[in-house]
Length: 260
Image (cartoon, rainbow, N blue to C red):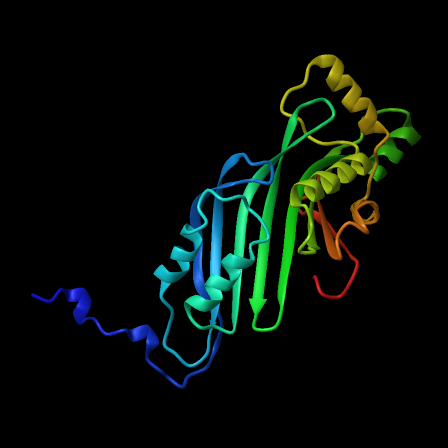
């Protein structure tokens, strides 16, 4: 007796003559991989192909391509991109992987960096991008100046985040690159949140905070200067989460024209 699966037509492969689609795919695919330091971590992935003159895609083919690389180290993976491209005889394919990477500070505590590795391939080109988010803090320079003029009070602090996207070279050592960029960001912003702190450490942190006054515009500039030269192209987005306003403030600094 034939199963219902054999009786179903392959709707996706039917030609339709309708408008082409740039990206069709799957998102939210969770899978264990190894991070840049070879630690096992849960990732959230997405995979897309373009669609020219057919009704649709086969989602199982895309998830199968991702599953073939389960537990492998997150990397500039040419084979994965090519398998996505070949799975539908597509002219372009895109892969995205999100996870958190631990970075050890000088005090031997870890901060967790949100990471995204993206790859896009066409018949002629292949490009890779790494995005990281580094948390930091800043004292509002305006509040610091007002308190100093009155010789009284305490300036308000802002939690902040910088999101850096860099275009990669296929020969980049991603673990070394991430460690270098995060270290340089921490050096210039000086203040990062840490999970554990005793009173003497907290006092030292607050003293440094009083000397680390950054407008959001200054933050994106100094971070851009700190990472320039380590990736081919980059964009830095800094967000300061206001403590006395209902809105936040954002500044964008970029090197080239490709990333926005």
